[in-house]
Image: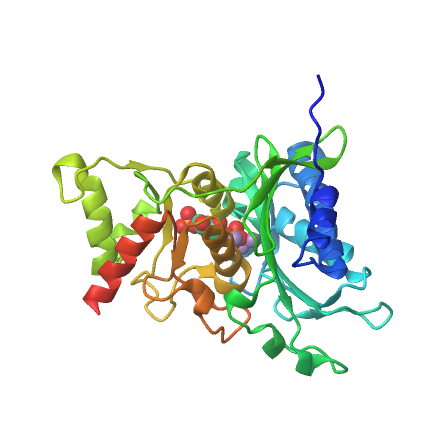
Length: 339
Ligand code: AHG
Ligand code: MN
Ligand code: MN
Ligand code: MN
């Protein structure tokens, strides 16, 4: 008995035909990004056999030593997206400046931002990693002139699409175009993305948290309070036991909570008091916040809704707390009460 399979293309074409009519250029963009993710997935799966492991002797704009796969993935996405005519410009965690579409290619109205390879510390140890992307429209005022960095600096609620690919035991693509969240699994033999997770929903309650506990001594009091209460278990203020998971690839930690609920936090840290957090607003926090909200969850920086933050720079950092609604609401309330 064969069950009818829906491919990513079919899903997107059907979206084009609904009342909200997904624009053809946006469909093309998503298809091209997802094709690039297939290429990255292939490289990732080759590991040592493909010569893709290890580091380069250079730092990116974030001050991190680049891994070979950070650079390979960045180039795959850049090359795949340059010529399609759907983009005005791109920006990446791995590139200091924005990348305008060269004049030899036609230009479109969209702006693409990405974290080409998320979870770099897990590359060499064969643990799940991923790619995160976010799509904005170039402002109308940009038509007929060169795109600037300011054109990208729009709050996350203006994103028209966001998603991630996870390179794990299976390769999956999790996507939103602003009408819920869907998941596709890569059929490696056929080379196609098959719809396997319709209408992904994050449960409102959870007993699982994800945070780098080694930093506990550097956190602010509201953060410590929240985690202390989780650790106190069922005899403490929360009256229930909590479990902890920490993969250290945001993609994989977020994917887990998309599948079964949970709260993921990367808070402010006293070691670098002037840095709001570790994660990047444009390449990590905004796309994940859109996905989480679209799946019924909540995403804040401890005080504000992430999607309402007015960005001031392409590589801006932010505190992140996202996932199951009732837990994110609680840790946010603890921060607001402490102000
Ligand atoms: P990236 O590999 O894109 O630089 O991102 C790494 C991020 C994120 O994936 C993860 O949640 C976090 O860094 C892990 O940080 P720790 O080193 O504190 O575990
Ligand atoms: Mn990095
Ligand atoms: Mn990342
Ligand atoms: Mn990265």
